[in-house]
Length: 159
Image (cartoon, rainbow, N blue to C red; front, top):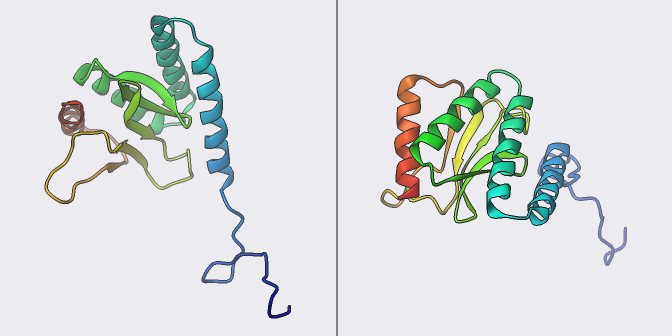
């Protein structure tokens, strides 16, 4: 290599090659593109809402245990706590939107091959508490107390 040429292969600090996005990340981006195309094709707002909720429920059905059970319970808790939120898919994940903008979402552990599932909130969620607050919660299961806390968080996020 001359002094003016640069190696085009990028490496990390451990000299492993960096190939960009993982297969799971690329799949999520493709899912998002399909979601946007499907949303643009829908006619009325009522059709859109019903179809998007059906898509969310279908995505939940595809999940493996224990994520499926958590996603079903979260869907019920979120819908009961904030009926004004509209279910929709967001990067292939169940999400809940206010005025068309995602407020919270569920990421199954299998989505990106992680150790635990996640309940996340976007920056639109009204969860501000001083100068630092959680924007995502790791989930390995759901107790009745967890569901009550999540319901309260969702209500606060919408307020």
